[in-house]
Image (cartoon, rainbow, N blue to C red; front, side, top):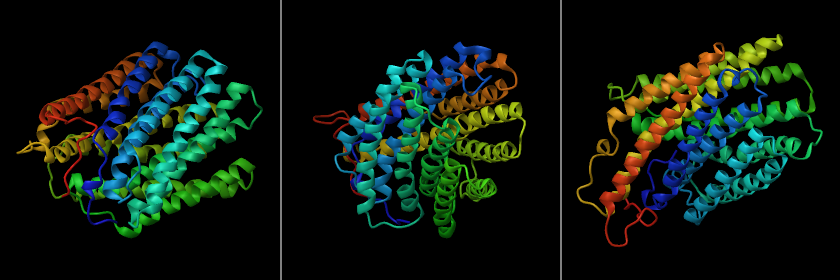
Length: 434
């Protein structure tokens, strides 16, 4: 793993910030949609409105923010300078936003035309993004667990979108395709290939750096993404071919072991942190890791369950914990550390003295938003069993996302106010070499 950070290679601050500010409104929309759907929301995972809600969160919120964070991480932590990063950010974000809107409205309205338009828009946006980031990763000489995880996670977006595009073609053109197998592959590559392996790579950096913990063991940091990729590829091939069910089961169990090892290792490191005082970001990360362990337990229960009614309930609850409990929690925790740090870093060139990072975001506001996020997670999970809770759960989810947007916007406005001067803008300010 790189021992130094190449801060002078960081992109303009507007590159990550446009993604960070663009994500929460989609989560607000998802929460309002959940409240509008009411008790019928979580009855079936095939509910078109529920599929719309899921993609508001996965593409509009998760993918957008994670893509923005990666454009910051690649040059700084992996020495992988992304060419024309500002142009890439504008183009790829516009495609992700438009594609997400088209896909979501396609589900919500049952519009075949929207699916037909969403496929090329999302496909082209992801292809351009993967091409530029992959080129940067191919050129870097950096080694270690983080770079390896990023080299696996970025290309994993391709099968995620390919399988998703094939599924969308069923709704757009009525093609006869193996729906369940494609859905399994799409979900596996989205959450285990792209999502979780990217989280691993980022965790190897931000957990020791921001939470003052010991570093992940190098062998563990290298083995986890490699094993995850190996098991995922094997399982996908066998599942699509409908072959060797016993081996598929074994691969799924081994993947569960990898995920468990990552979550446990992270929680152990957090207990060994040098600063024992808890903060909001640590609570978000702990929530995410505990939810990840719960996801593994539910996935194992689903694996050994044959009752279709129980399977349906388990899979909906699993989705809730994975999206809201794991990824939304970790993204919140990441943003509350990265945004103040980016403000401080980029202000080095234009302000003296630079305010302390703790002044960039209000601690009470972050704590309040964490409590609302936790309440929304509990409420959405309970709504799987008590459908009448869907309305308050949706309102809490929307409120938490709106509060996150408010906090982030406040930090961005603070940066603009402090950096105000001739020729200074979000698109031009770059950090000094550290």
